[in-house]
Structures are given as structure tokens and as C-alpha cells.
Length: 380
Image (tube, rainbow, N blue to C red):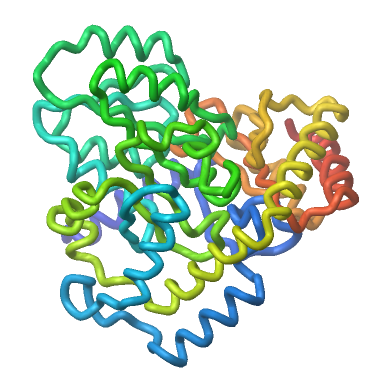
């Protein structure tokens, strides 16, 4: 048997195993009422973003033609980085074409061999992968456990730099990190705090810049990673921090150096997002009300949800098959809800990740709760 045939047979076997375990995934375009995406503020289809992006396409074309260190740099990128830094309350920011690339850049550039990274056990995949590639020793601590983290920080007496890496709003659980307590620990132990604000930027804080702002710990954060493809409605991510950190990333970060720059029109759409965040703060309040209302209705229907207030509401079902069956039933009822299964979440915790956005009215949420309750009676 030629090598190609043997490899193909191995792949077929593994795909069959995924299917038997209820882990086979498929690509499915949006259909039905959105309760799955991260477009929390409804910016992705806003007329201002579309107008600014179309104008930029006419002005600058579609592609950047190269990395930013070659011919891909544009004044529009530099301008949006200045604007985002001001929005975030930092001196500088640097734009990456995806949040995954931004996290890889941060975690493979700053930590070095001999350093130690403390990582929350529920940090998402791009943080985990970046930590694995960093060359630093990693210590995984229990989720949001300040006391255990303090103990482990105190135990570490080596000469290397210590880093604490956490999401601010956890993407699969919808709960928030104790950022103020972390900032206190980091100050007392000389630990550099790195915060991924992917699901918080645009939503929390007086200006909407995230949970770092809401906690009042901006001066205690070394760098933050701020995804622009979720609440901001476009794509990519900003790393925000001091000038030396941004300059270092430009010189060292392989995901920045060796990636083609994003299309220039993306910067114009991002500028529109920041304009809307400043001019329409009511969207954030509407989102909070919608999330609170759905949480109330789910609890009233006897559907178990964890305590919290965020726009991310996990409904843990457990096994993969029932989670898929419930999501399929909801899709047939006209609600776009997806089942989240391992390895995205731990085995035995397959769930529906309900994602609230401002375009959902109370009547729709009531209909959704009724459909969900019916589906869970049948399958969960």
C-alpha cells in the first residue's frame, strides 16, 4: 500500500471515531435568529461600518499586498492604532489580523526560557497554544481561584520573570476574572499581568473599553489583547500597552512580521466602530438588559444556568449527543444555536453557548426559552 493510501485510511478511521463520539463538526452558514455569534452590539451589519468600508475600498483597494514591514503598511493602520490606544487608555497599540495571532505574538515574544507563566485552567485555545510555544514554564491554576494563585506565586522563588495570563470574560463560561485581586497579587509579586479582553472590549467600563477599565486596573496591566471581530463587529485584534512592548512586538513577534497585513478597508470599519461606541452608549445598556432578561426567563423555566450577568450564557448538557440533538431541534425551530463540545470544553460538559445581542427583543427571547425548554425535555 502506498503511503498516501495508508494516511488516507488513518484519517478515515479517525473521522469515523469522531463521529461515533459525537464530535464530528460541520460548516454551516448562519440561518435563523442569531443566538450564537459574538456580534454583541450588532455592529457587523451597521450602515456606518459598511459605508466607511466601501469608501475605503474605492480609495485604497482590497488587499494590503504584503506584510506591514514590507509594502503592507498604511497610514490608516497607524491612525486606528492611535485611536484604539486612546480608547483603551494606553500609550500604544498594535493591530493583528486575528485574535489568535495576537495571542501567539504576545506569548511567544515576552516570556522567555526561565520565566514562569500562570494560566487559568479555562483560558481558551489561542492563549494555551501561545503559552505552549513560549519556552517558559507553565503553571495552570484552578479557575478564578485567587487564594490558590497567591499560594503558587509565593512558592516561586526563581530568578525568571513571572506572568499571569487570563481572560477577563471567559468565552465558554460567561463569568469574569477577579481582575482587581489579580492586580494586587501582581503588584506585590512583580508579576506581569496579561489580560485577554476578547469578549469584554466594547461592552464593559464607562467608555466600553473592557473589564480592565471597569476594574480600574489599567496601570497594573502589562498588555491587553482586544479582539475586534466580536463586539466591534469587524475583524482582527489590538494589543494595547506601553511603547516598549509595542516596539518589541514589531521587532520580534513572528505572527506580525511574517503575516500579510489586513486589507486597508478594515481600518476604516474599525474607526467607525469606535465612533459608534462613543456616540451610541445605549447599545451597551440594551445588551445588559437583554442578557438580564434572558437569564431571568431561563431560571423561571427551570433551566439551570450559572450565576452571572454577562451576555454569554452557557447551558451545560453534559454528553455530546444530547447537546447536538438539542441544538438541532432549536435550529429547526428557527434559532441559530450551536453545540459546544470537547476539546473546546472539558469532556462531559458539552453545552449550548447562548450569546445575547442587542437585536434580540423580549418576545423573541420568550419564544427561544419555550423552544429550549421543549428541546431539553425531549433530549437532555
